[in-house]
Length: 276
Length: 343
Image 1: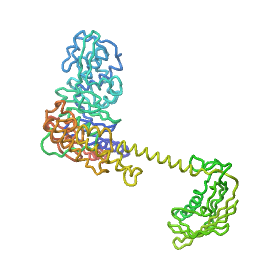
Image 2 (image 1 turned 135 degrees about the vertical axis):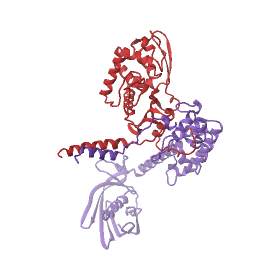
Image 3 (image 1 turned 135 degrees about the horizontal axis):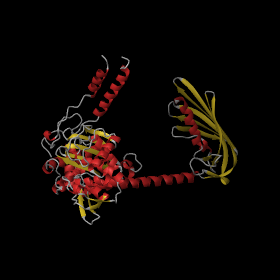
Image 4 (image 1 turned 45 degrees about the vertical axis):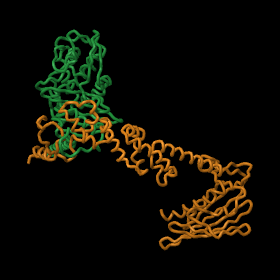
């Protein structure tokens, strides 16, 4: 019985924690398996924001952060056969191609290139496996409790997951690095490798040209993760960050989330008829 | 506090008594109220006087400060009789060097009284007694003042007032010009400082309204007059909604989807959105419809608070991994307490 007051305190804290999460409404119940909308630093709408889910290429937010703190941007990387053979989204690197770390980061973040991802991981840590160890160490250090990496690029794999809240925290860290923030805000970019070969990089984020004030950040897709997106927009000194995991229609749901977050007066039409 | 009002009011009355015919000046700074000197001590032609005002009420004496005043040459004795907007003086009589008068003041409570001023070329003494009744209790205030001529001065009251008036007029003129420039209607309405220019204001708004019936004119006006247009229209009895709808209809006729998606044509967005924005999940529409479809998404996706609906056009439910029912935070907390407690 003497333990009761402490137990009560713990229980009350748990109850408050639950209530705090429940206080963020789910305005978009059909939009994604998990999502989080943050306006000016405050969570606005969310669903399953702490649930670990496959993170696909949103993984590359962590990859980029570790690369910029470990490697000089002008350092030249020679692309390995392993990197050049990476599947999925690619920057188009050939074995032996030589590019600067900055150019590979552009390929990593704009094109979501898995070839650039492997090349950078190998450059920083010697191998992708060692790089992944660093990623997980950093996730723990940053308190990303729902995040675990099995590879550097976001391929579907057991034990490879992150929550919408953790990815929002990663995106915030990335946006705080000017070099990376500038990159993810580019709709397209042309880079030329140290060997003279050119690469035209169109951002995989289709919200450019649709959402005024869009400033990045990253797209992702795998069969298990589905369509994922972290998007960030700034207008008139205000900012909105959206994270969608396994989105039903990520582009237009993200547009709706961003527009409604910037203008809470926008009211949603009642359910009537069919629409786009 | 309210019982003090008469004393304050009458202190002002006496101050006002000297405001027009004389110019008061702080003897420490040589300056009157504001930054401009109301008079210059010196060769004249006006008279420099030193005045002391006291007030007695319910056995208390207030005031007693001495200040210098510059009395305009050629003033009439009657000019020294207190005047104010609330009080009227009547029965002003001058016999020899003595002026008497009666005074009636509005206010709460109203007051009546009499006063007299005795003047010689170099001295003036005055006394005024005011009476009022408040909650059945009679109150009497007595004010006395004495003045003596101490030299000569040059009264600048008129110049200072004229300068202040000119500055005030210039400020109002600038505010009106600025208000006209940005179409800020409040300045031109009712008793606003620019009300005389209301017609010119509306003469400026009317052609803007005409231009706004076309999308380009509408967008240009919105950029040029942010935040004031709707109020300006209302102030000039123009129908903003009708103008906006005309511009939207013109935009639809010319397939100006950027304008329709700009936030002013939501009826058109709901009308054309289903036609051009249904491109399937996770696909982007033709870029020409981007603004239209972005607005359509913003207007139709999500739910209002308390609604359980799936947004129109959202992907079928099976496309989204099923989510467990959200836990009731209160129930979760209570359950947690139950597990931890030994009963």
